[in-house]
Image (tube, rainbow, N blue to C red; front, side, top):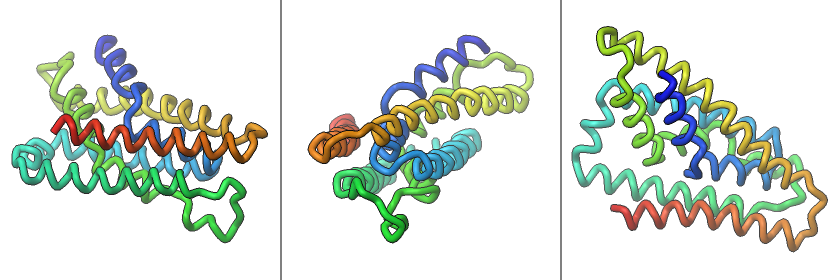
Length: 195
């Protein structure tokens, strides 16, 4: 169980679409928007875990055309999020709040996030510590994963929010938006290269 917990920590803390976009949303839109986005990611990651545990993910990704379609859709969505970050107005007002990524964006990102499936497949198909009781093992793994997942994403959000709250010039904020948005684009490119 300890080895599983360590693996969960390192697989979740490494930059991927979820944590990068969390930091990006926090740095551009602030804490309140970021927390809604993280809540959506949390719901989405648990849906992905259920899809993986049920075996549905294995069936779906066994077809190359479906993998390619999922990669295409996830790439489009990551680019959409990157554009939201690139094009955001650093002086937000109430009228623009409907354009801020929220719960739905977080759920969608996890559902089409290739890393979410790979990580969950690793969590739930490996690290057996209760081979005689699969149901209990899965329940414990879900609890451990969520107990590690939430603080890690809140830390990434906090890092982004710190940047958001700093009295930075417009030029520096634009560079920051460029770095955050570009990071998501790099994830897309790496996914396509690894195809």
